[in-house]
Image (cartoon, rainbow, N blue to C red; front, side):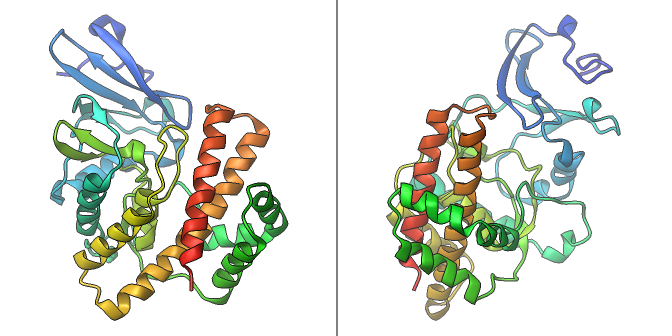
Length: 311
């Protein structure tokens, strides 16, 4: 069916396409597109958008997603080759996806998250899976090395030295959890939403083994330039309680789990704060300074809320 749709150099062949539209741009500058081969039927063309993730999305589709009770766009055709420009997939088009964030989708995704995090981690211990960001231990080391810069940004945004010292004391005095589960890896608001009345999870190419808090943080507290989130203090606790119920975490252990999450979220948010500030300083990103400034404020708000919860 898709013969000749993609040229030998890995681009859509306009000779066979009625209409096409860009959806978003990947990390390597290539665009994910919706294309029509006739007036009634559309598909999604996704070239390799992150050069480090060669073949990963196809692998995930074939080895993980088929056994999970969740909605995602099916892969209809693909090419995985050594030449990066010739790597692409064609997916079914689920239509317009509403990238909303509220208690309904947060709790629905938390229940689904429990499904993929319950898959035996040993199944994936020898697979070529890699996340898009460094592990939390490396983030902690990075912010420790940049402590003065962290406190300078804190003061500009009226975060007290008391709170800053609290974060640094907490993560330097106890280790992060060594538990590893299968993580989506990049579960920010742009990668989930509603297609009609069904929750859908997109872009699994960053799936990898990581701490259970990785996906939770992306769902609850990570900020994104394109998808503003309101303050979610109450929802944060509701989602954490829901997660604990899904995994039958007892009441005595639930408080420790939440404390571990609050610390993880605070450290990840400080790392994000440094990254966003660096983007603002360089002015070499695809986002505007207004978007990045809003993202920075949101990140700092979330880290303050989580830091205040640390005992």
